[in-house]
Amino acid sequence: MNMPFYVSPEQLMKDRADFARKGIARGRSVVVLAYDGGIAFATENPSRALHKISEIYDRIAFAAVGKYNEFENLRVAGVRYADMRGFSYDRSDVTARGLANAYAQTLGTVFITESKPLEVEIVVAEVGADSADDQIYRLTYDGTVADEHGFVVMGGQAEQLGRRVKEGWREDMSLGEALRLAVAALGSGEGSTSRTIEAAQLEVAVLERDRPRRSFRRLARPVLAELLAEGAEPSTTGTEPEEPDARPTPEAEGSTQARAEPLPAPETPADSTGESSSAEATSTEEPATEPAPTEEEPGEGRDTPGTTPGADH
Image (cartoon, rainbow, N blue to C red):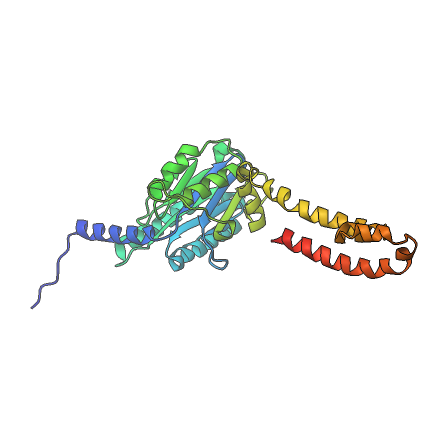
């Protein structure tokens, strides 16, 4: 009889933890940080169909990193839990703490009993009436719950990005400052390398403290682009004046010539073609009746195309 292969519980738990951590590290990072008006969520996600940041209840939001099908099942279970509790008791009884405890039980049970742990890491956040009442809970693959304050970074290079956010975060940050810090952290790579992430590649949502009931709101890409561009305005002002100085001058000269030539008919051929001597030698009354209309049209047709293309190029 063949003896079954024995693995110690310590080694089994270690292998499961390593497996889950590697799967989570392959996902794009999510940055959650508090600002003066609520809590902001930001992640790099170009997809419009698959969301990593979602609403759970009135003032509770959910963010996750890892396998999409696994944390989407957790999100749906959280929505059902919140709806049932709010319907059975009261809407104020639905809290991020109760939801985090329910998630911890599910994640811990799967990690211990199932052959494969869930490759997910989630954040449950609730915005309060004051910044002191805000709650941010981070849950790992094994059901561990951590009560975070200020900001959370998970997935990918969480330690490096967390140091970057810690250096620039403060409690009284505005929404624009918080988002610019989050995007800069998401774009920072190993060492000194960094990249710029456009608004179209981001998924951003906020829990706004001043909203009466449902505080969750997704930021549209035009609004997000404006918030991110506020800090970039001083760097681009030095390059903008060069283009207006180079382009309008030829166009303005061409437009003034085109407007000035048709007004005095005898003078435009003399200025544009250079035949002032022949025009002065002839009588001033005859060119005003017959030659002027025939010479103005071809003269204007040659001068204006010759000046405007040069200005465009």
